Structures are given as C-alpha cells and as structure tokens.
Length: 181
Image (tube, rainbow, N blue to C red; front, side, top):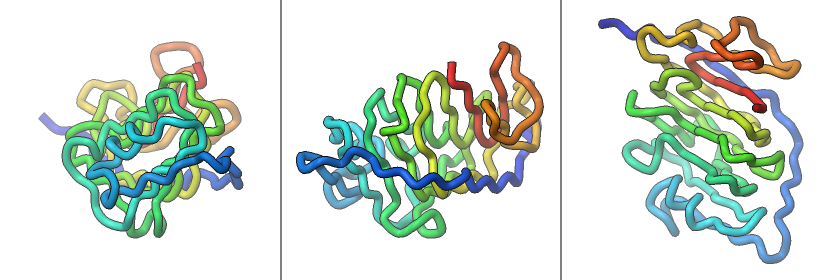
C-alpha cells in the first residue's frame, strides 16, 4: 500500500493581528511550564492567553492533533517556523481547529511536518476562523483513497485552491483543509 507524499510548502499569508491580550492574559511557556504544546493550550484558560513555544522539534503525544478547544488564545513560536517544528511522525495531523474559534485565536510561526490524516494532514480548520500566520506545512499526506490525495493546499473563501471535496463548500488537501462551515 502506497501513500502519496506531498512536497507542499505553504506559507500561509501573514496577517497583522493584535490579539486581545489584556492585562490579565497569561503566558504559558512550552516546555518550561508545560511539557507539550497541547498541555500548554489546555493550561491557557482565558481569551488572549499566550502559549509561547520554544525552539525545537516537537514529537509524540501532545505535539500532534493539536486542538485549541474553542478558545481564542495565541499559540506562537518563540523564534519562528524555521526553528520550531512539529513533526507529526505520520501519527496524525498538526492542528485541528474546529470548535468555533474566531480571529482572536492565533497560530503563528510553526513548521508542521509529516502529518497524516484523511484530509488536512498539516492543518484542518472547519467551522472556525483563526488567524494563521507565517506557518509552513511540508511533507504531509492523506491516507490512501482519500479525496484529498492531491498535491496542493486548498483554501476557500477567496483563498487559493482548486479541487472540491465531497460536500458543498469543502476543500480537501494533504496539507491544509479549510471550511468555514
């Protein structure tokens, strides 16, 4: 059984976003305060909290299939996508944002490698509209027989893309799946 590997490099368009990080916003550092990216997100309980991820390559449980859990928080690499890498090791996707997060939810400056899922192996956004800036999605793949088995990152609502999924308004891809829902 062969899985088609995609050499997608996607730099999601940068947006200048000033998240509502008020005086009460907490900063949770990974791995100093929490051992994994997901643990850092789970510790961020208030809108505007910042999860600041130190440079390094993050693997294993808690560092793939990352969910913001409906929170409008900022998940940011401390030093940029070139040195902050989520290696999913073909065990799941990078980010899955699907619980109504708004533009107050921010994902910044990560490289996601070796994601594997039925679609959106690097990042899947459905029913949410987070701000995603300066991220690189590379070497992610969809499972055999998936409709997203195409060598492009597809985005919707005026963003680049071609190739539709099974449902109206749905785009599937190995790298990114985006549907506002």
